[in-house]
Image 1 (tube, helix red, strand yellow):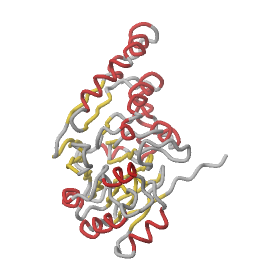
Image 2 (tube, helix red, strand yellow):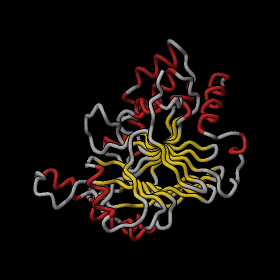
Image 3 (spheres, helix red, strand yellow):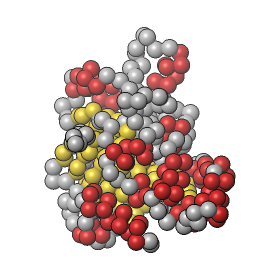
Image 4 (cartoon, helix red, strand yellow):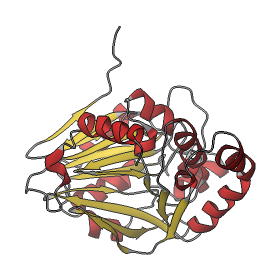
Amino acid sequence: MTSRMALVIGIVAVMLGAGPAAQTSTPKTGSTLKVILLGTAGGPTINPERLGISTLVVAGSETLLFDAGRGLTFALARLSIPAATVTKVFLTHLHSDHVVSIPELFLFPWASQGRNVPLQIWGPEGTSAMAAHLNEAFSFDIHVRRDVDEKIAPDGIKIQATDIREGVVYEVAGVKVTAFLVDHGPVAPALGYRVDYGGHSVVLSGDTKPSDNLIKFASGADVLIHELGRSKADPALTAQQKIVADHHTDAAEVTRVFQRASPKLAVFSHANVPPAATLERVKRDYSGRVEFGSDLMTIEIGSEITTRPFERSVR
């Protein structure tokens, strides 16, 4: 490891609260699990006010990224997290709004921040093929920077991609990541993920219709981050919008999901619906704690669960 890369990793470890104690292989019961909603918008939208779906989970020495939506590297920069330190990516499915920032995460931290380890990606069938085509698509840039001009470290521009199925897909330093199947209509396979660390847990639904399998894996979790679609009963939906809505979970349906899963905190992400009206609808029939996620929001899961919206620093 270069001294520059070591310094970057040290800085981000201190910033994210992953100090020396977090390097042990067996976490203490009650160790904090941190979740950062980098982007919360759903779909292939173009909106300067919203970032695409991406979620960062920090557990001890592990920094894990779930999906890579539009504006991912911008979000990391806003939080002063060097993109070169984000090298483990888990994809829920291969819709463009969930993977569009992978090329940037693959290329830019290697070329400008000194990443000298491969980018690792886990995802459903097709993930490995996508990674191979990325190498092909950017072969000119890679060749020039690696072999001709800057002579940048070759290991940093490798991708180690793995097609996964349901089950435990990653277990390191007390952090366990479990993938499970969800129902995203014809988009199959589609996955959700559960992360366990130090006696705490967070579940990410991915894109899904109401899913019994998700409820199974989310039951009793500390935090459930669930997607949210438009109301399927909305008469204003166009034919195309009805098709899309049928592949997601609307407010009435997600209320029943929360009733059955009973997380300590439910958080909406991948949502393009009015927050206030949605929360009012859900809380009519669900008494648990529910919040609407926002871009760059931080959730800390420990003896208590706290949420903190992003606050722009004033200089």
